Amino acid sequence: MPRVLIVDDEPGIRFALKRWFERQQWAVLEASDGQSAVDLLLSSADDTDARLDVVVCDLHLPVLSGEAIVQTLQQERPALARRVLLTTGDTVIDAEPDSILARHPHVLQKPFDLGTLKAVVDRIAQAGLR
Image 1 (cartoon, rainbow, N blue to C red):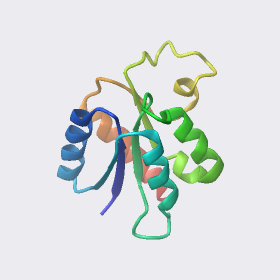
Image 2 (cartoon, rainbow, N blue to C red; image 1 turned 120 degrees about the horizontal axis):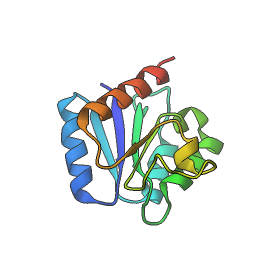
Image 3 (tube, one colour; image 1 turned 60 degrees about the horizontal axis):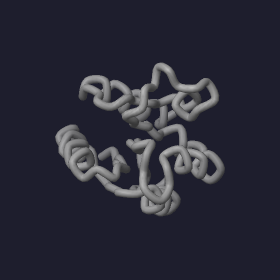
């Protein structure tokens, strides 16, 4: 069963995403702040059942931002950093060229539809298997 970590400080968003992923037959972990997420991410391992196939992470979080999480993973676990999907209420299309929103390969602007979420999650999960 694939595994996802949902990182968002808004309980309603975590709840909705958790229900959606569970309906898609995913095991779900949750974190409400950036530090809790980093602790979970760095304790996971790609060669065990604790592997995280996708991380859905809000950009604006308490303690550590989504950008700080991605930067930490790029240094400590680069393969896992490539499986992070950043979500944000910020305007993505007008992002500064050197910003995380422009550089990171997987970004969804809120609100997003579930069909788009599924397509991006499937793409990340498939790429992570290679």
